Length: 364
Image (cartoon, rainbow, N blue to C red; front, side):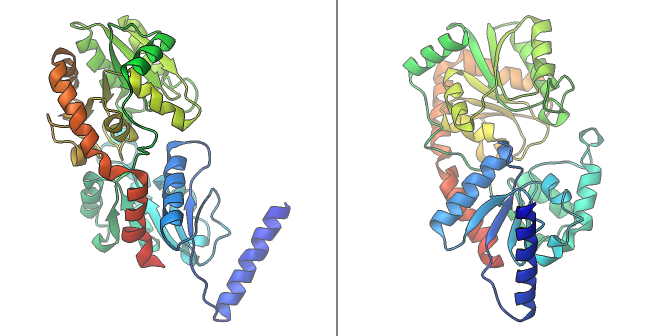
């Protein structure tokens, strides 16, 4: 209650001083749920990187309703839509990030949210997207071109790095992954909700993942390494196929880095993506990437050179590319090495600098 009173007093004081003609130096407030989700780590790296490199104070908040006269960056479409009723939209300079979504695909449930966003276009000073696909999609929807900014996601290269053979063997032993198994990683949440996740989140393509594994297992000894919550749909499918798997919940994001060291390949079977971060993390970890043409993948990957790409929902193509990694280790090694080179521009400090220069600097 005391904090609420302080926030209200602060809001009144700011509004009063602005009425009297005072000018405040804008600060950056990044709206994220502060629940240890992926968006929270975006917020962490962006605000820290901006504060360290530029003369702009930046911090993460979960509730923007008390802010007046500031740069407020809503870290997701849902963060923005959840605050539409607040007066802060007309009192602040608003930035909104939209990672993914295709309103034309009725299965994915983006039609209504995108329409709401477009209805409030006048309140959005910058719309940030992380990839070319989404930039073109919003242009097609009629969003003002001069307010669309494309800035990719980043990766912490001080944490995500290639593992040694010793680290690989030790981790596989600890996780119960056979040394002779072809270990495929899938580290993103792909079930609805935050419990078992028995209902598939179609945007992430868990059904495509299972079809891919089903095709691959007929020729190779496959083991699937899973992290993230809500993987029930996938684990049940793997059990029905008789495919061995390991599923671990990783509480600290930094701890995820070591799990890449157990992999022979990382797969992204999604229908829609903003990144995903797994694309960047796999490249940084020296793991061959096999992905559908979603999100950042086609922006970064040159098919056959630093990764392998398939069309969306093409389980046969994904299985073929995974088999290529297994059956041609020398080519897989070349792909992994090229991936390490291509990931260098995506370190979070460089991406935070891009955010300042392309998004925030012009809004101060």
